[in-house]
Length: 42
Image (cartoon, rainbow, N blue to C red; front, side, top):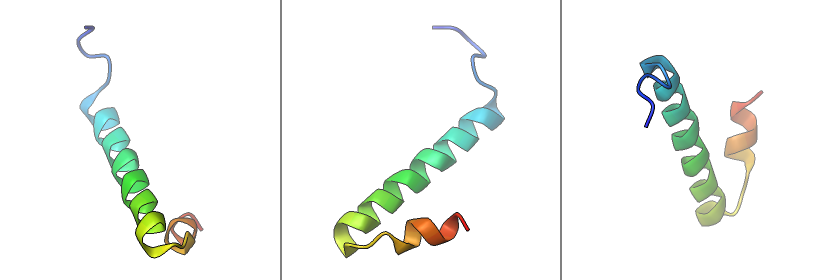
C-alpha cells in the first residue's frame, strides 16, 4: 500500500462522486426515473 497516493481533497471528491452516483442509481431503481441525475448536471 502506497501512502499519500491521494490527497485528502482528492479522496473527498471521489467519495462525493461515488456517493452521488450510488444515490442517483438507487433513485432510478426505486423511482423508475432518471430525471434527478440528468438535471443535476445541467
